[in-house]
Image 1 (tube, rainbow, N blue to C red):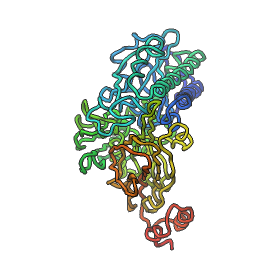
Image 2: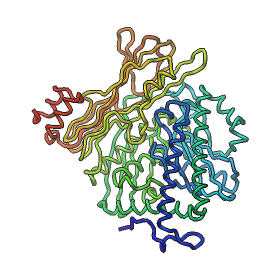
Image 3: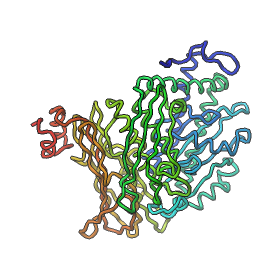
Image 4: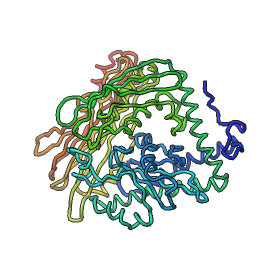
Length: 570
């Protein structure tokens, strides 16, 4: 079994043939992780938009000089997984020797390492004594980057209708941004320039604090020691991960799930996977997955890799293993070109999270066959996004929020209630913040959705309901979601969770909204959103009657539902 201990003084050579002191290693490695976390805090606190400032839809990491992720803030797993690939697309065009102080890389191209256009990656080189020792990198979801509809274009026919594309590029902060031509170009192509430019500046500020912290470490310990620590931190994660894999039985395991539909027909979009565990390695192949579609459900390969990585890391390893490039080394992930999980240009990709979650679920199901005690049942496991926008006398107001639901239950405990799903990890935007920023709607209802969970030895988490009163005419509404047709799946006897739905109450009538849709709202409309609940794990007859009584007393389950699902408890 691989060694999982930190390096000893006689086993970790530096480039200058000195030795890496284990105490220095412990201090520096934690310093790098702390710096990445500080970057994340700086980014979120400095942001202008509610989606970053309140929901935390952003991430930060430190990379070595070759673009390998060394340390990251614990923010959005989906954004962090492919950060190295997004970086390398830039470095291949603009090698390190061409960089100067103030330069930065930018990339959001889904077909060159990016994910979807709204997630823009910025990388700033960290110079010490004229040499690049690493990079500070951030990604933020930008609320509006142009495109055919404010915030979200549910009917985009190609990626160009979804917003502004930054191909892998190099610019300089002082000459190109900071009032320069690039900043002016971006501001001219978005609907709320102050908000978008403000969020970009928050990314630059976070990169700057990360670079400053690494420079401080280099001044104290020397650049060679810092670079060696970066390498050893990745090697440590790799050793720990390989040790965990070595304890899993070898074999080939299959899983399958499906996106509800493509927003046009009712045909499910099937995702299939084969997980092969061999010694200390894992190979994940998505062959058999359906072809790419004409709507925005397509998932770029970088997002597919991130989804599969997140599932394997969370199921098979300890949470104390730092997530960095070392974790990726034992894993191979492939998907057929032209498929839903590896689309070709110019496929629209805005809602790529729906297919990414089905990749996550398919891998989870495959792993349930080999480590049933470590997996979770199906949960909300979808990105439910609503965009409610309005053009008034003072310009656009663009509101967008990501909604949580119920987590799937595990072999050990109930699923969490009303939280974002595993790949996203966004926070709830406080009602006070939306009241301050938007005057074209009012939130009039918000709470847990009783009886929305699946049942079992452990129950799933509850979904939520949201109610909006529309206060003005000509309000633009768009949504993408999932789990409206195919319910979250139970495992080992657990029952499915509830499905989500969306509806508009207008003049006493109810208009049902598809999970991928858009329409204009008018004053007096009431928008109602219901997210799916998590599924159960194990047989309901094995549930502790005291837990059933607690759920009824606290209002999670109605007495009628509890009696039907758990008759042994009464």
